[in-house]
Each structure stands twice: as C-alpha cells, then as structure tokens.
Image 1 (cartoon, rainbow, N blue to C red):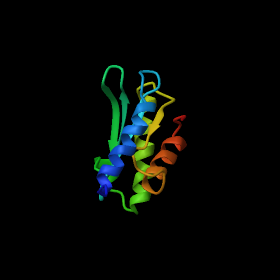
Image 2: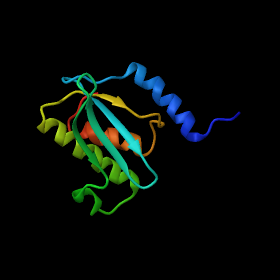
Image 3: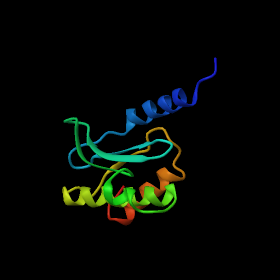
Image 4: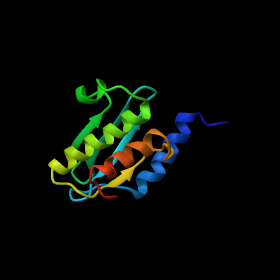
Length: 118
C-alpha cells in the first residue's frame, strides 16, 4: 500500500525528531508550512515551552507584498529578532519533514541573516 504525502512527511518528521531536540540555551526552531502560510516557533523540549513564534499571519508580515518565498524570509527574520530579544543566539533547526528547499530554506536563511546561529 502506497503512503500518502502526509504519511511520508510524518515518518520523516519522526525520524528527524529522534535526533533534534531543543533546550533552554539552544531551542529547536520548528517549521510548519501550509499551502498559504508558514509558521515558525522556538521550542524548549525539556520544559515543553514555546519561547517565541512568528508566522506569515502576523500583522507586520501579512501586510507586506511579495512571493511566498520572500514572506518566508521575513518570517525567519522576525522569529530571529524575537529570539535574540529573549536571549537566544544559537538554535537547532527542525525542518518538520519538509525538504530543505524553497520556503523552508528561505526561512532558515532569513533567520541566519538576522543573527541566529545554527
């Protein structure tokens, strides 16, 4: 029986999550990508707390024009700015089962440009 796209992504996501986990000093940058929007959050897996989050639905980002890739870069910069404000400089990147390509890649590059290290 063939796997659906979501089942395949879930398997990849579970495989990644065995390796990648976040701490208070180095949280996990989790990415979720829907057809229209993209979401990113910094998670401390030890305590189960979200440190900061940003998405393409935030007021300052949703008003900007551009392609979905350009908006993903803005989300990366926004989550990085919030992280640095919270005192976090280095993270581990969790691509959430998506290929490191397109919107996921541009979000990561935006976060790097804004000063996060991973």
